[in-house]
Length: 131
Image (spheres, rainbow, N blue to C red):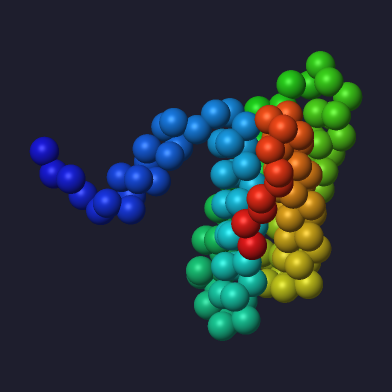
């Protein structure tokens, strides 16, 4: 049996062992990462990469939307935010507009940081957010 890339093996195990809360944080981190990469691709005039990264961010937002329990009021609010983010990412992709990406990035970072704080409060640990 081939071992493969040790980093990929570690990454896969991290996902497999993560709690639902940690998986949600990973999704937010991925969304932030792909939006930043899309912005860099636009800056570098790499239209195909920008498209790829924006679509990956949209896919993550779709995954976040699919996990919402709509019996809670907060989920209805998040669904509206996710829908708005998706529509803005589509606009950013059509127009290759970094200012729109920056708007969505700010929302994604706020959501990620809020989620991280909620996780820390729930587990009584100090918050630690990645870049």
